[in-house]
Image 1 (cartoon, rainbow, N blue to C red):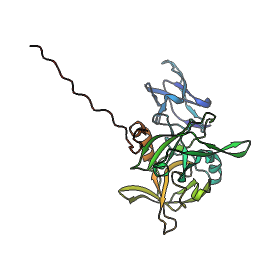
Image 2: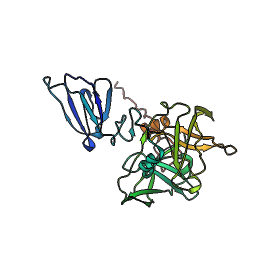
Image 3: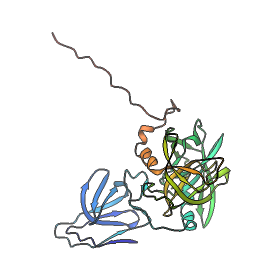
Image 4: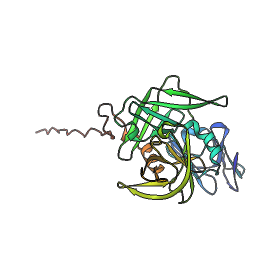
Length: 312
């Protein structure tokens, strides 16, 4: 358990979260989709989906000095559709992080090829590159579940395209097999918080070699290619890595690996995770349509013109 200390509060409200975690502070706003809490030196925005119970204290409640958070349940912001940390978690080594994150990184297969992806919530929603599934409707996802300390490979065939944005090369899929369990998911971090020279690592399926880990550094955050800004990394990226996650050393996704320069080494590129967050937060606008599978947007019908009758 991590503890935040030193918050003298004249009124203490308790927000009970999942997994026996709790946040203690002063509720500033209680909305239908989120609760805003002042814990003394900062303000947390907690999605309703993470809250089990709220206990509001009266004015005579004693001051509280400790706020306890369960590190297994990261503080998230946004809709709660995905987990996103407010600040980076503790730095760990790659070996430990791979053991923690391996189940959430998947292989995406189509009749014409394969790529990688990563699961963003326990209900089987996952992110990959648009070019991995472009023009395809028959998609399968390979997941490695940990069973009794060993990895068990499971192939899921009922995979639906939820949303696509071919201009940013991102796609949202969902595993819908009836026997699918609750999935392990990644946490989205911040590419903006990275510094050039920081260590990063990728997990994916280069050339079909699933669960391959490559480590490197962030070479630049602002490499402009084809009118867009990319993260450039020395972590080795190859065909099959496309759609997989690029992690910081806290185990948070900071980008989607999507291409490399073929005639050079250590020149891999990733889409910043901020692009992914925007896509997920506005996923209804990018909803995939079976009637027009090439269209990355869902347009609303224009309003009809109504005639007003005039009484003479």
